[in-house]
Image (cartoon, rainbow, N blue to C red):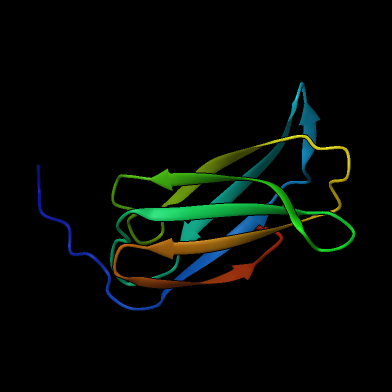
Amino acid sequence: ARFVKMFKGTADIEIIQAAPKKVGNDMVTVLKLRNMSPAAISLLKVDEYWYDKKMQVVSGDTQAYRKPFTPGEVIEITMKSPVKPDLYKNQFAFSHANGDVKVKAVKKFD
């Protein structure tokens, strides 16, 4: 085991989001994330919120990445939200143990 320096402050992450798919009774969204910060991110948390046409929250999910998310590392997080009849639009909120997360959507990682 070795000590990993953790990032403090606003972390930078690149994201590739697959289109949400209905699988059984869940709406599944797969996210690929890459850490663009100069140090590891600890306890990365992703919240997904599903809204109806009136922009009321009707469903959602929370997933946490418990290991250190090292610089340049690519991880995959799968969100599973229960399907409701009036799902319209989803949105994500990211955070980590030592601050906020700034997310940039990309088509592919360089």
